[in-house]
Image (cartoon, rainbow, N blue to C red):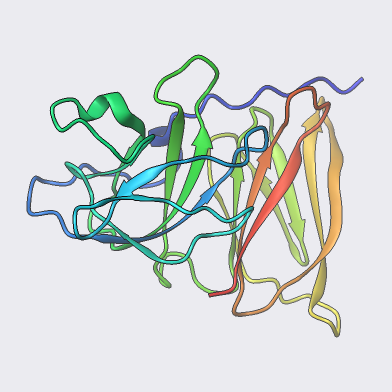
Length: 231
């Protein structure tokens, strides 16, 4: 019998991203595009500080990145609030999520995730460098939110995906005349690899993808949510 898979208790700083505290200096806006990944509660009212200093609603798109936004860091971190009216004497009371910015990061993809049950604040954030050098067009990233070992087969690539680590998937070149390639995901059960998602996807040089491996309450195996970046 396939066992249930608990969500990975996310310590965002533990993922394999270079995260460095910024030295205190005059903050400059960071260009972000964000996505909310919360299958149980897919909508949320969250707010950020824009480049003018105004607290503005973050308008998420279902399973898609937002438009490019200018977010003002707070003490070297990206911060989200649960309301627009923030008490200047106690801003922490309105804190919904925060994450330290990697040093010198100017463009970021921000994945907003629900915090583990009973933990505060209510959300976590994961920051991925959105520069063309760090995340080139045609590549994909796999973000596992499960404790078990998983793997991806995308065209000619067969790669292990380890818990707590983001996996880089190079551009897929083994495609058919419609630029489609078989894309399968597996989890390890004992010594066997069990497929849990099998499908064909279109891979184009201009597209980037983020595959989020996760489970929903009561699920007997993981599932995959795919975020496609066509910009």
